[in-house]
Length: 403
Image 1 (cartoon, rainbow, N blue to C red):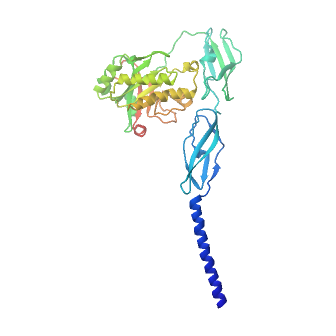
Image 2 (tube, rainbow, N blue to C red):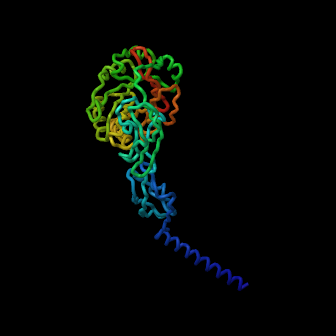
Image 3 (cartoon, helix red, strand yellow):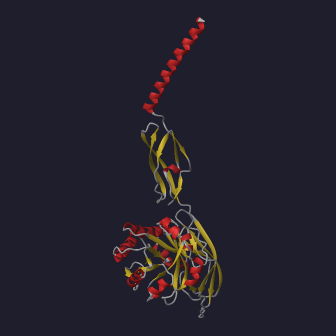
């Protein structure tokens, strides 16, 4: 029995000492902390202009990462310093590098058959939209021989390569034809009444967009016809690199539309080639508005795609021009929106940051991106307007979500 009691006593003493040791060890941990370990989650490469954060690459064990965005707007090595906390809240810093790369090939926008009239002197290489997401001046050239002074079909390839070595090759047929003086019209007038029957619901509104091309408008009749909103051209840049000019009918259009209870937004047609021009144009638009209340957004409209190559800008630069204009507008408290057609939205306006007014002349659009408003025909007929006018559908739920 004495031996058993002795063993029990020894065990008790060891237990006490073990407890004391554990307490001391925990105190030491509190003072020193456990050194965090790092895991690299992905390859240390990131695509130019992509949305990336430190947490996309780093995982911290035994600590908390203070996440932040990574600037990916310039190719090459990017050193990133980030902060983390260990288990005791002590902040530490670590540095790593990622390689910003461009793996996107240039865009060559050409159809399978490209038709020119015999005798034309236009440079085909310049007339085709060829551009790159990053490179301002990719190499764009046609491979193969052709003669614009001789009719026939010429099998060719449009070749483009950017500064990162990404290539695009688009085979096409150049068709040189005799000049044809005959003209045909395939116009299909779309009556407002028919559009309302098909597209007007509890979640939509039907409206118009107008400019000086519609000339005098009887806004009372427009309102009575069932139009509830109008996008009115405020102005346009006269030509590339020139000043802005007010639409000849803007002042009377906005005044009479609002007097007749029609909700109004405005749009500006731009030839801007850089951010500086975009800011200047936005300031001009704001000056014309003089703080006037609008029920709908101020819209940026850029459609001079034939000038893209001559501007020597990248696709990202083009998007930046639009985003800059709209950012300036929003700084003054107005809602802003961007206008473009389906094909250009899908291929050029890939870095767009603002709500979209979609142009797609069809009965049922196949555009898969998000949009607030849909310009569905340029050949509408509305009481109070002589001739054709654009008809638009506004989506109320999407409007509430984005504005």
